[in-house]
Length: 171
Image (cartoon, rainbow, N blue to C red; front, side, top):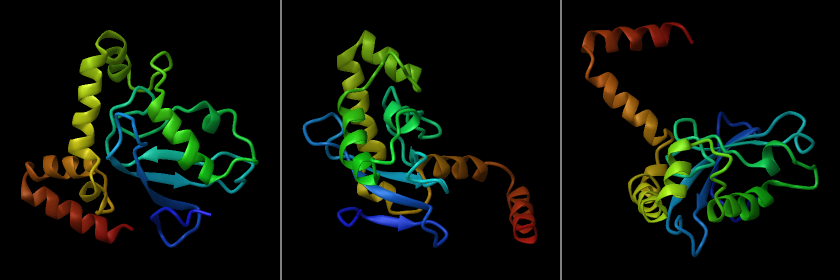
C-alpha cells in the first residue's frame, strides 16, 4: 500500500514507523522533506493513526515542539474507509496547502499568518531550508533532539558519563 513511500519501521514492528513525506507541489512547503512518525493503534483501521512531524515545520496546525498534527479528519472524523495513503496523499497535503489559523496548535504561526502573510510565507520557507531537507531526516533522531543533545554537552562531562552509565544499567 505504501510502496511509493520510503518507510522505516521502528523496533521491527508494524505498528510504529516513519514515512518520508515531501511537501506538496505549488505550495510554500514544496521541496521540503519531513519524517512523519506513524503509530497505528491496535484497533486500526477502526481507530485513527497518530501522526506527527519528526523534524520541525512552521505551520499553524502543527505543534512546533511535539510535531503533533491538528487535523479533524484524523483526530475526530476518522473512518475505517480511510487508509494511510489517504493520510499521505490527501490529508497532509491539504493541511499544508490550506492551513487553518482559526484552530491553531502553533499560535505564533497562526498569529503571523493572520497579521503578516508575507512574513509568514518567508518563515515557512526558512524552516523548510533549515529543517526539511533530505539530510535532516537521514538520522533517526529529530532536529529538536539534536538541539537538546547540544545543550546537554554544555553541562559538565562527568554528569553526562553518570547518565550514560545509569542508562545502561536501567533498561
